[in-house]
Image (tube, rainbow, N blue to C red; front, top):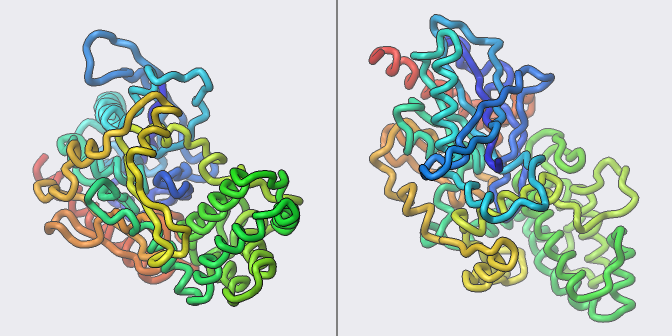
Length: 457
């Protein structure tokens, strides 16, 4: 069955302030879907278990089940005074995604079904884990998982006492934010390392178009970018430009203050390293594009191990996020556009009709752009409580996130030096002060929720 795993962290009240793995994870992803594939705790500090879960929670004409996978880390669990951190799953790992999966079965791949999975699973866990029956549960998630964490608290407040929704773009939907916000933030991240850096990227699109207009230019471009497969057509050039666009977007999301692994090892503050190659936007086309290659090489080949660059190598393909693409074509419709003025990308309007036709060709489904705001309330969520929305100032997804307090218990935490859910990553000596403060505040709120729950029970 095509639904999400979960990570269960069993804790005592005194251990809620960040034992190893509690507030950690590695965010990855793509420009088209929230990059939320957070990794489980290190060194197998968890057990893998399975639970027979209903395939369809909202229909009654069948009672089929699938084996839902979940992970349990109980090193800090104490029966008498325990609390549970429930890490909601993300849009990967789709190791079970098969070529013969049809739209009939994909029909169950929805956020609503996933939330119902979580609710039923938690009920089962409380009934079967000694000492867990009256333990308070807090949902934690990043990116899409952060969206699920927030929606979980909204839809099942009797199951979870609160939620930490990190880098959760719950407003990245129709009519809630301008379609160009995402790419404007990406561009601003590069501008912070020098105005000429973003100008170089902006000018590179025209340079690519001009150089690729001849067969000789296609050969030169293939050689200059050390491509594994040579460019032979306009379609190949379009793929190259999309690949580069995704590269700049992903760099914005993983612009962490320390070395990190993504597709390849990355340096600390990788955008600063990239921009060292992009200081002169006025260079002749071929010289500019040689510098663009050097910049992209930081992301794909910083270790120097790759003999060539593969334009099919991207975060989405390597993470196996085809399931997310299906959701983007059904309920998770996130309008995005560029104009080449407020951003450093080629102009591209949001065209829902074209998008819908592409979805139908791929999946035989039509997207519903207003479904998520209708189901979860859009910006009308003030009746809910106990949700922390954390966002990084460098994260392009923050444009669709909650960055201001809505009420006293729907609180926003902004991390100016933070990329994509930096607060959910493991502690590092290079962490900026702002993320340390954010984590401390998040734990403070969680302790308050737990204490309030205890007073009522």
